Length: 530
Image (cartoon, rainbow, N blue to C red; front, top):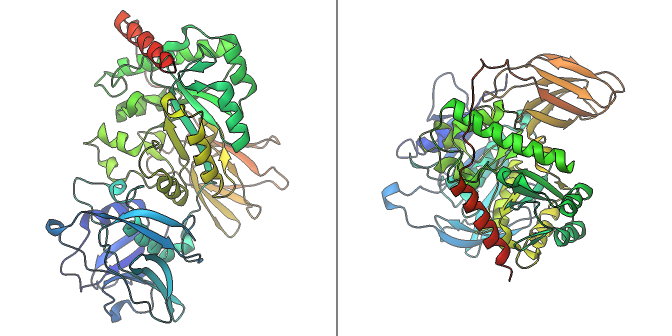
């Protein structure tokens, strides 16, 4: 069982602050916030205000924050340039970087003491520093606690536009929980273009041959979210391009008919199942004609998808879905799970893994840095119009992403299978799958493995296998001894749940208006280049 860490909130705060913030962090991390001193509870860390002394929290890591403004008196956030030090106590990937972000208190700065290391500065002066007192780290920040209202969620205070207040707090928590912290999966990335099909070697501004050349030169992968309705025709030469360049190009699934909110409407279970089965049948037809494998990853049109449909996706054999945190929240506003969106490497909603993605507007590079920090796949999405410059935008972002380190670029199935958390206890490797199937590279020190099922995934058994023929069934929490000399690359698959009772499904043939709408939309997209 993972240790629970207690963080004491200084009584110098006028009242218990950050109720919503603390509730969210307690759901995401093995921490418990306590206000003041509580009998029988020993603090593992402390949050104080304006560097106030607190003898009850002596000898533990501490962070001092500035006084928070009352919610009613909050002023608008102001954009500021922040420079991070090239210091080990600055987290990857911010170390040594300069970023533009929005801050609640731009003018507040710290007077760094001789024993303190400056971790981040604004143009006004230091805003984040660290010292060691008796070997224990003490942080100071000129920033307040991030404020989350009852209507907001984690993603509202940790996104490409504003993130520094939360980053400072998360890094403090990482310091406290370091002994039992889980490691993130490797860096991974991909680009997605919504809508294109295999009707021709071009789709609007998308030129598949040209994209292959750019991807080969800059080392990246582009996935095309294709609409199952469009599988009625395939251009053989275009199919050949995808089949022979699978390292650079791939396909995934974009709805079914591309109707408005088609995955977010209030369907019956039979209608949801029928819609997805029709999409799969159409994709199967495409695969049989072309010998191209289409990733069983769903990109809902316009990001609109209900959690009931996510549950059905998992039951119908989809590997995962790919939806932005904003779209998930917009179409599931009454669901409690929306409060914690944006923290984990992948969400697990109704048993369906959901990978994040970001558009090409706003502070894209900050979003990519945050994704790398949290262990999320760095997935950027666009439409064919975003490639009217011939792919230069993708080239620029690929260079930025590849500059972060050794980045794995691939199709969406491969990216989905790298969603997990892990840690090593001596020679015992503990793995938390965040997907239905994961590809995991065992650390060389590991002699046994334990699968820890997150609460969002039902406790089904798992199967572990490696290329050398090793196959075993694993029950969550059970220790599995690893054979000497077995391969380090392991595929861990969730066993399929028991089949649900027979449910007759039917879906109406796509109506003429939807077919006509799609044909006209495709014609418009193709004519835009002229």
